[in-house]
Amino acid sequence: MARVIGGCSVPHNPFLPVKVKEDPEGVDARCFAAVAEAIGELEPDLVVAFSPDHLNTIFFDNLPTILVGIVDEFSGPNDDYPPVEPRTLVSDPDLARHVFHHALRSDFDLSRSESLQVDHSVLVPLQIMDLSPVVVPIILNVLAPPVMNATRAHAFGRAVGEAIRSYDRDLAVLVLADGGVIQEVAGPRIRPGRPDGAPGQDWLARVVELLGDGDVGTLLAEATPRRIAEAGNAAGELLTVLAMLGALGPAPGAPRLIEPEPETGHMFAFWEAGR
Amino acid sequence: MSVYAVNLVARRTLRDPDFARRLGDDPALALEQFDLEEEERDALLAGDVAALYAMGAHEYLLMGLARREVLGLDLPTYSDRIRTAEPRLDY
Image (cartoon, rainbow over all chains, first blue to last red; front, side, top):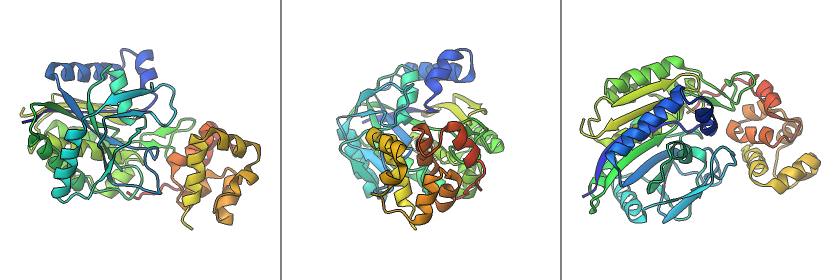
């Protein structure tokens, strides 16, 4: 049977590839290197990625809350950020189909795509960490309100974890969430002269505190739609982390590493399953 | 007013270089093909992203207008204008 061996939370700001090169001693460069090293030690066969979409792959004409890519491969980015290199990633449609079916039978009314392009989202961390894994992409609508509840995102992640663990192949699977924790992008709370802002610093600190303690239950209770909205129009990306933690297992415990980056409003974290 | 057409204009501007060029050359003509309310059209032609945001347009898409530098917008102008809007605290 397949097994979930670990999980990580990494940011995906499209300008990070430049920032990491320009500031190799900074938080982002250091943490990406640490997460890449941890992933390398676990030697996953495959990554299941919970990612947002920034209204590039999906749009208001047809906007699923959960979209599973059931594809041989997928490409991106489709949103024209030059720091993000065009690439095609190999996927595993058999596992993706199994995840879709299991989640559907677990009462999640998700959508599927059999021809998929993605935006910068999952591509940025993989580019920076110089990884080209097999990836099963799962896109969550966390940026075009209304979005699902935190508890629902976590429950969906649990269903994905169950699906992976019931998949009849010997695969070591890493679950990955990409996004920020607090952030305003293109909205009224951006900083002067910048496309982003980081309101809700207290929420970032609280999320890191609770996850550092392994207290996912309290985080789920506190991550109300209002609390997330107050932390910025991209703060819903936390839902990808909660889904990833659900897939990791019932008691993910304390992470092996967790570190916030307050200026942009994201965090890095890595968990090993069963620790 | 669904504001769908405003979001569609912004999306096409970012993703369709030919449309972005036509919107830059003759905004009123380029917008004729969209089912816009008068208030939406006026705000688009004025580059009034704060008003469009208040109508419900998605800010991620609106910023695409500034990235393509149409309707009198660029990133500094966009930043100045959107920061005058009242944040929507919906999720």
